[in-house]
Figure 1: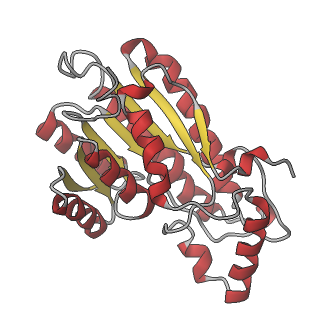
Figure 2 (figure 1 turned 60 degrees about the vertical axis):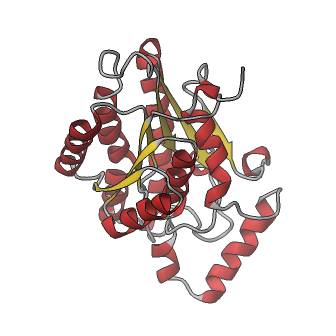
Figure 3 (figure 1 turned 120 degrees about the vertical axis):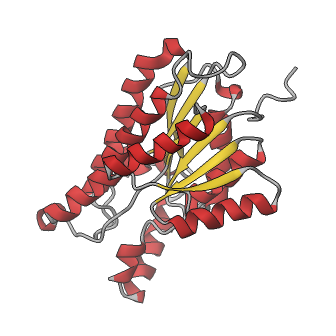
Length: 275
């Protein structure tokens, strides 16, 4: 009865930001459970590498150039998806950046706008395009559910300031916006059997998200950053991208058919601790 609860055979999935980090793990994980995965990224070389890794394991995946901050690029990418597959069953809105700006009074408008364009506006543009390929009448009779998984952050749930900049106000605000967006879209499309949920990862290593901060930080600053993190995480260590695959597959699959509008923290206990 429950043998195929998490299987994704016959489903078409799109993962944004699939060229590295969390997005690569999501893409390979969905493919491993049977989905055909479109690995979308503005870093086409990274997307091609992800698709190649999938194919080495005899999984179904293909790369696609897509800049989620550029409406024309999104429209073009999704037109290609429609032409190739005719519909989409799963979307993981993963593409995102973090900037190196300082505290709020020091923060540049350019960095604010750049981050918002990718981390929040990009979620809207991609979701809008996906919904048009998920609505009833587009999907075949045997694929009558759709799932959108938005990647938020524990930064949207709590503030964090250990005495030096570790989170940017734009990042926290954008990810909080993703949560509000998730719940609204979930309410609008529940009757069409399109589920929309969010994952709020904690401080996972092995991604390029903090590349800009690392580029302007000294080794001593990065060591202090890591020490403070470890004090705050009850599990005592960071997660890695592959840790998130099980939760993503659960939300993408029929195993979560009655779950929508939810935000699930994946953080080693970070959000369980006050102060």
